[in-house]
Length: 424
Ligand code: ATP
Ligand code: MG
Image (cartoon, rainbow, N blue to C red; front, top):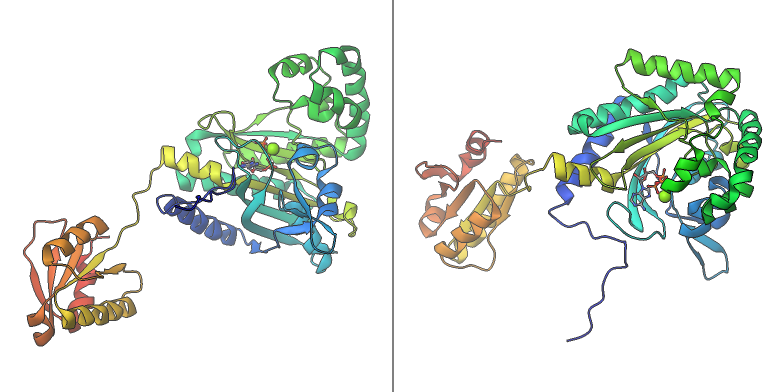
């Protein structure tokens, strides 16, 4: 036998038993986005490397060690997108969607990061991204959180998630705070881990949300960003809290929440679950008013989030299992003419009942064998055709899951009858 070729580590096949979760989630997400008046945008999955370096920040996990970067045949440096915000802003600038106007956008698709694969952390994973542009006020930040809260409710996950929020203030306030933080950390530099020591010079705020418990302990006494906010950001944050409270959304303020990407200012938030182990953040976002300008566009306020689909699917599998999608009807046919008649009848049924799932029996077999397959298909009903049925233009209706007598119907009326016979 030839040697087997396997998938790339951390890049998953999504198998038939899992796709019902994905389809359910995707269907609900599309409806949810529409119900808030957001429009879909689709961007390529490959972009110029420079786009991500300039937007995400040179000293971030993603740019430092997680990007899939390669040279194409022209020698251009390209990167598989590690996230969608940069591409969305790029597309918005390129097509004149952002200047002097409002946009409410969403996208869904694969992202790529070269991380150590583990539960909830993959090299190809999927995100729903939502981005708004041209709205400076806290009400839109609140709406982003309200729509995610609504999603958890619809999915039955509300009891499994919690919301953390924080404000990073304006760029100026953050720069002033940064100096205070460095002054606090510099004397204890030796006690920090290697990553944090490096960040002290480049991106010290990131040390605050280090996942290393020793570093976490060291920064508990650090000056708090929340105590150094500019008045406008403070007002913005208060307004956000007020809207969340008015809508019954519970939250905790985590003053160490800074997010791993450079472009955030003011509002940041994360939805976290304790049910998935270490990879507990299922949705994260915030405001990024400076990014559009940073990428060469006109200054445009912006706010958004990204949600990790794999992690939500994992939660659903644990908390709200879905029964596998099965066929409704299985066509059983004995004899060559009956086989052809069964295919015709199945086509008619699909025409009249597009929601119905009808599976043909292929490759013949005696009745016993075919009924075994029918049973395995999960179908509720077998439609049975033999020589006699072909001649009389009738069909046998056999109930596979209920103790009911077999019916004999005219082929012309079976579609109408099936509507009431299939209990959805
Ligand atoms: P983490 O702290 O878990 O590395 P992050 O801050 O890098 O997350 P974001 O860039 O904010 O994550 O992406 C938003 C969401 O996308 C995350 O909250 C998570 O649900 C999901 N996500 C991020 N990286 C991965 C990955 N490698 N595999 C699966 N899901 C991921
Ligand atoms: Mg990460």
